[in-house]
Amino acid sequence: MNSSPPLTDDSYGPGRTLIDDLLDEQQLLTPVATFSRKHERQTLPAQAKYYSDLIPLSSPAPGEQYAFAVDLDACTGCKACVTACHNLNGLDDDETWRDVGVLFGGTVLEPVQQTITTACHHCVDPACMNGCPVKAYDKNPVTGIVRHLDDQCIGCQYCIWKCPYDVPKYSKKRGIVRKCDMCSSRLAVGEAPACVQACPNEAITITLVNQEEIADRWKQQKSFLPGSPNPDYTLPTTQYRTRKTLPDNLRPGDFFKNKPEHAHLPLVVMLVLTQLSVGAFCTATILRLFFPPELLRELMPFDSMVALLLGFLALGASTMHLGRPFEAWRSFVGLRTSWLSREIIVFGLFAMLALVYAGSFWLPALSRFVSLPFGRELSSGLLQNAFGIGVAVTGSAGVFSSMMIYRDTRRTFWRMKFAALKFTGTTLILGPATILFTMTLQSTLSPAIAAEPAFRQVVSLLCGLVVAVMTAKLLWELKVFTHLNDHEWTDMKRTALLMAGVLKRVTVPRFVCGAIGGIALPVLVIIGLLPPAFATGILPLSVLGELFERYLFFTAVIPPKMPGGIAS
Image 1: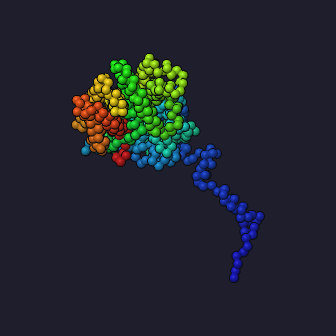
Image 2: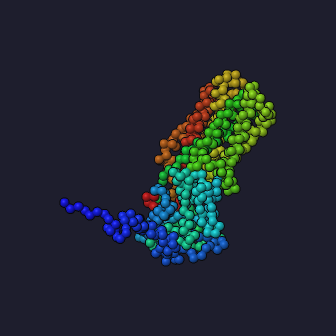
Image 3: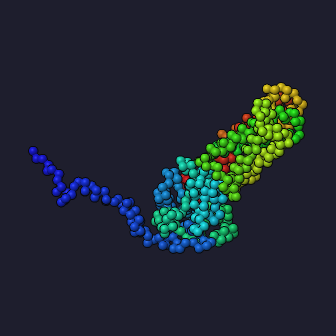
């Protein structure tokens, strides 16, 4: 039998061992490692010869900034830019910073199809930056690039609503928003962004634009790109160029796509309950001015405590909307420009004053067991009235800030005439309904309260107010369905179609709960067919109806966006 020769040093060359050869093998670099080493040694890649044609050779002068330039005639919609952006920036599977859409139009004899590649427009006046409550956006004063600061973001997603181009994208697993930064780290060393490098037709380049000229242009012209939002809001800098004459009837490929938006359930709860709490405190303050103090003195401790607890529940629910709730304490940073920051601060003041105000009604009872400093002063009628007015003022300011948050997004269904009437109506309905709930509940436990002459007057007055406001509010909401007859495919028609179609399962219960809880039940109490004790049912039915209404407020809105594809 032949045996294999023993392994000796001579098998690997004079004086070499197996370990020597293995160590040498480890020094062999993969193509990726070789490419990286060339970068480290400033050996430029083959594409370097094209960089001078695709990016500016000099930095922006004062008043200028970098901007994307897109040659529409060269764009074929291949999505190489999308893939390169995704890979080189390490995006999640379902995350995109650059999209490709398509426009259709023309005539039967001369049809037109135009592909569009879009990313962040690095606007002169970026709405995302203006709306951020924690200043998690920065516009570089030299390059003009709008960058998102991931470490500052609290995940409130308000920038997504503010941006009319659907640029910021929320990363649920990170709890923050992210967006295109024009590959600023590459530009800083003279390297073209990923999308620019990847385009086989060189349809995307980086150019320099004058910011004043951009502002003047969009103030005079209202057309940025067919099917895109009005540019006068943010002053986008992307330059779309073509040697062709595009027809006026171009429409995005997803123009007729209609789907509900995200419900944002924590915000649904937050908005309804903050307005309930504010309405309850305001209603109680007004009642104290016009009705016998004896009755209100018995009702206020329980009523103020219910309003306070529901207000705290609302503020707690709002934090569940945040991706990073423990960072919310920094929300005051954007006070100068952000309505969200203002809302947070004002409702914080409201909560503190409401706590003192509600607690003042319990001080006499607590003083029997514990000696409290300033207990007598805080429970005096004068200070209670002062705190009550403070609570009403800060609460009303908070509701107004909520209106402005949504109005400032420029979404049609969130315009001021819709948001103001909805939010004010909820406040005027649920505030009196809360007082009715606590009054009638206390009267069942303490019949002496119901025996007082003013009790029936207060119940009838509040029931009448609920009926009047709920009737007006429901009629106003029904007016949305008149847009079903619009000849054009307007945002309001799309909203009406959603509410009458896929959201019908919410729309119907909304009107049923509102009609029963806010109209039928209080009317029956007023005319005496039902005893006052049945007024306790007004609040839960009305709250349920307002929750349905606020759900529709978020899901039936039509957000502006850049042109999408047929299946986008």
